[in-house]
Image (tube, rainbow, N blue to C red; front, side):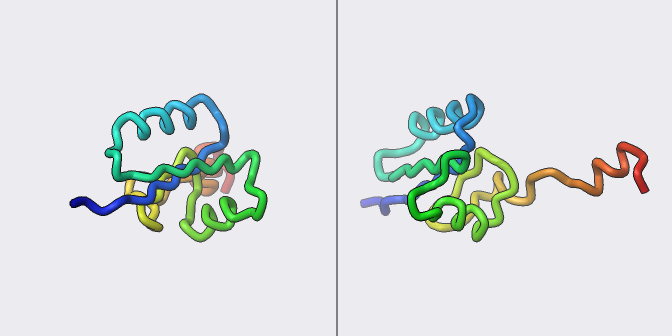
Length: 90
């Protein structure tokens, strides 16, 4: 007997995010419960934005599994310092 996994998907409601959600729904097992949070729309209680901040989400789509940000989704986001360097700004 396998344990049910809680999968949280954080999106911005964009086509790339929507495709990721569909891929996850197709690829994951029946024991997975998928919750999709559209950060662009927000939630009634702001729970989704609070969770995104607590998980350290820097870009979307992002996936958390059983309350932990998936390794593939951590450490991303805009690197302002790298952009400054590329633009020649000291």
